Image 1 (spheres, rainbow, N blue to C red):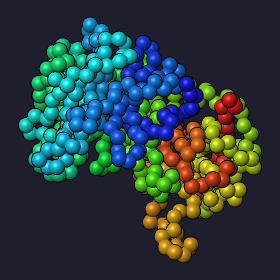
Image 2 (image 1 turned 90 degrees about the vertical axis):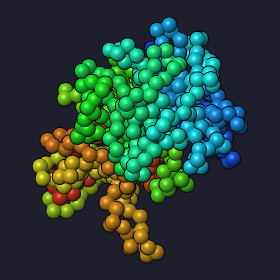
Image 3 (image 1 turned 180 degrees about the vertical axis):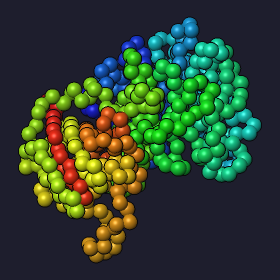
Image 4 (image 1 turned 120 degrees about the horizontal axis):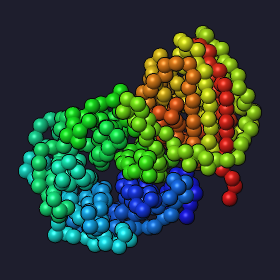
Length: 475
């Protein structure tokens, strides 16, 4: 059992997560990524939690198939329970040695069941099926099954692609229906926006009068998005802030946890463990909680249990203060170090017309080397920056002004009003930033190794009204 904020199995990484509420606990199935060469098959592994803080690693739950089996890689899917109490697991089967006419591996929907409380699974290869006519057979994955109570049937949603049309806009959420969870009949697409390459890891759920459609895409932005509708049949509306998190938090899916809704995704690693390394597939498990706003939109934040686990106050010698920089820049850095694993809460008061303000993270004592959590009220966004930025040439003075913040770590947000709260969870190279319990930004922080916390303001005035820093008890 581990009590890390961010779970990762020993010597492996967490891929797509399939969360399921089971007997009051949250069961987090995930694709086990070993990063070995030659690449082994991919199974489903399982980690369980009853409090969102401590995790029990249950190891492999659904083994992948053999060298020539259709499910050499057992990829993303879903778990449901029928009226008789039988558990059904639907997943994507893929084998790089089984290819279609285009030379790419086939993707197939596969089925397994459990009659012992999901302790073990029996595969049913005879229930396997691929894409019907009109869809690409190599993009037919991530089956999500939901009960349509009004129609008295089951629906299956799939990340699919039309087999004709503009190459980068064929993405569609295909749909099949079934009465018995065995025989599936294709029907009209669930959502067909003709907008993205594909819509990975689709799911739908309901809170009150609203239905929510969640999917991940990588053609417009590498991000998990959501849409809203009054009916399971749509139309699906895009809220103003339509993403769950930023670039580093991907393939998020959710499950109920009591009367709450918990999203589970992975925070990606970077090649070479450096801030400039390419993002990699899979990483470390991270949980976010969704709450419904009065207008039906969703707010996202770190679960309260995680924050409550940081109980020891830390004095970093940074008192509440104001920073006036009407036509320039000003910063103030803590006199004592920030713990490498901690919770930070900063209440900021921002004068109207201020261009930027926020926190310096892992800063040098003079504030000239740091990560920057920057609020930009005029642009309505939260961004992660770093100072100094990377050089663009051999000479150190050739710093890059072409990239104003870390690419794809930008979150649109509502910064009207003068009072805003930033919360941070830090653990090793992982960081999750939460603004006003509404907007999340998760990332990796590799390169800066200084240990101070700071505040700053640019072209305006900001005040640090209150600062809290806590860490978890040792041991």
